[in-house]
Length: 117
Length: 237
Image (cartoon, rainbow over all chains, first blue to last red; front, side, top):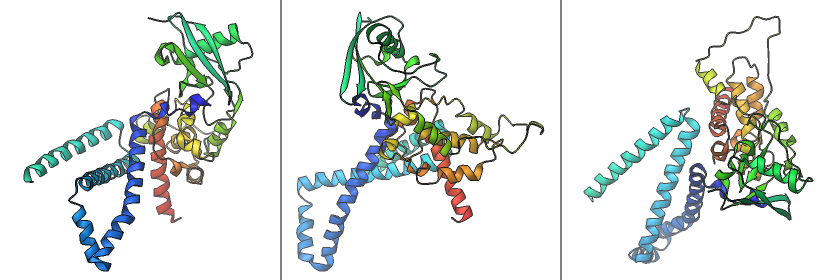
């Protein structure tokens, strides 16, 4: 059924939050083996590790790191959101308030952090 | 401005779509459009409705890819230009055209112990219910469910796992779990914690987003997840 197959019905915030959580988790899962492999070089091949660490100065790698931090942040907040949603018997307005407060405190914390840097 | 004619595409099978030109009126629901087609253009078109006022839950269909109660959906709200595509509800076997077999939906309702588990007889005095108690408020939240299967059609978890009980049945189980008149606590918790139970839910929230009565099956299922987990740790199994 074509009307049923479309993704129109999924374009709502709850589903988008779900898919963002899933995809960021998938991205991190794919990254982790590579991450451990590079870290393991500290034991097996320090010279090669230094080569890899030198690569982190390149612009593309810096951009990729930005993506990585984004995935981590998105996945962490996605997980917190899920745990709050499923484990706290709060009303919808209480949850909205909690999410708003978290976002505001995160924003303020970031401002202080940027100032410190 | 309402156009003079609506272009209505009706899905009548995996490979068959029929297109109809339907006169547009100021006040017209999606069900009115389907009825016009059946009464004036193609009498062989099969669909299902009864009350036409959003109480019986029999007229739900996919409208432009979204599950909706067609009798309470104004056509002007869903038109894409002057076109609309109407199909049978998702996740249920199609009998013919727009009529789906609701048996799996109702079978799961029973499988989730969505039945009354009474302990009193007619000779017992009527048990007083505290209307403002937390459990009653929780139970009341979902009693307006009309069994229309819109949430069931909206759910991707149902689409991916035919054994999953689905939002409506689980929400009913949550209602009964909170109902002090219902004595089926153990049976309900066992039924909803099995293979097809509440822990399949990924909290995608399409059930809550599309429930025509603005109920919240996703939160009800979250409640079941909490209760089954608590009971698991308490009973040690």
